[in-house]
Length: 394
Image (cartoon, rainbow, N blue to C red):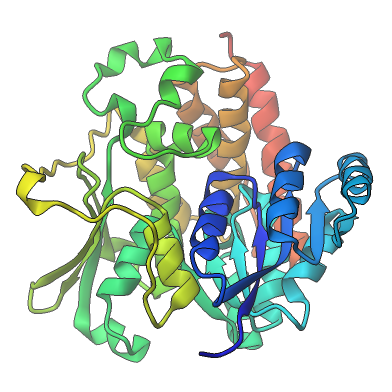
């Protein structure tokens, strides 16, 4: 057995980050924590530092970092504390790092993802926005740096596991991919009642335990729209080669249909530790800690098409991909603003889509050629979306 891999976890206090640490703790001979990062959760990051003793801990802001630094010093922990975006990039690109788990939610994760890609790291991508916002620019960085890009989203991991090993054969062998969606908590709810949905209801996912933002995205199926965009870049497919089907049981995580019409699928319990373990150990497999499927008790697996009236945001994926370069970044930024406003009860649930569509319609972008260009598009879209939110009456 080779020496342990050093891993940086971007967003270690979120659901993906904590699940990653759970998997790593099961294999201490294989993995060692190099750096942990968080936005605001000082208490949880401190607890993680006490248990895993990373070399570095990074907080998004200097005040939070100072709080953490004082408490780390009081405990005598051998952990150096840093703050800010450059520190995130530094612990992602450090020469000692073998793998980076990219689990920062939103566009804030783009810069450290690019840093890891350019440094040629094994990049475990749980941040949709790196591809949705970064697009071709991000994929160019992966290729230029010689990075290994491994998807961690359960759907994209399922597709990756169901594809041929040689990517050079995908274009001629694959007819389409089918992304499965649970349908979230409102799959069978009367669309006319969606205006009454509360943040608590939207965050109560029937199958998965996730953060609040992604839970709302699942309820609107905007998460699936972002996954469609992500899949285009990850697997080099045309938008018309991607299909979405609702599968309420969340047992089949996604499928690949080949040119002979045969379909390969990856199945498992709805536990993110499965795809995390696969990404950490690729091309091998290790124990994840997840429960195995019990086929004798599984019951029926059902499928249905997405309802366009209940989930109008899904179609925005194909519209953004067909729009000017940068449109996918606009869609992502608008959605982040709209979801935050909904969670703060400044926007109704059914108005999230209205803000997203109006922002995409009003903002016309030019092709981004740098990270600065992408961030400028992101800022413009956020400002426009904020003004649209203020125009809605809750």
